[in-house]
Image (cartoon, rainbow, N blue to C red):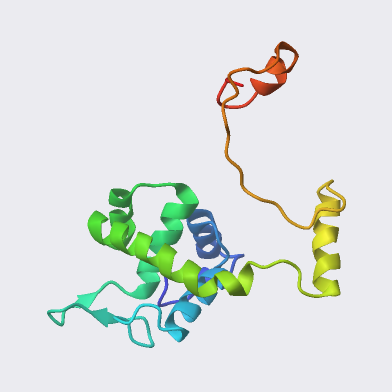
Length: 167
């Protein structure tokens, strides 16, 4: 599939199957691979994504390992499950998964995660949140939950509707 490039056309069966299995468009996958190669994030791979181990034996291509990462992220499958499509054992998949997440995030974070820098970016971001029903918002944050043991009785119904069933 990778060598033929059949996954790149989203209107074909292979293209739809790629999008369904890996949960990203083929263009994003190609960008991730190209960025990883261009920035030389994984020095064991050459400019084509091929590599060798310490004994000079070929190792799975960078493209295959990135597909493993996308499969685990997109489907939530466990590492032994990726062997069927990649022939990469669970331990190798697990080690590369964590290495990729850390390395790629560090290299790309400042490029993609930032507050709006120009008036145009600000207006574009405001428009997105406006369409979502949140006028005036320009970002969102993650949160954590604290359990409230002394919750007033009038708030208990509202507080217990979450997944924790506790205030």
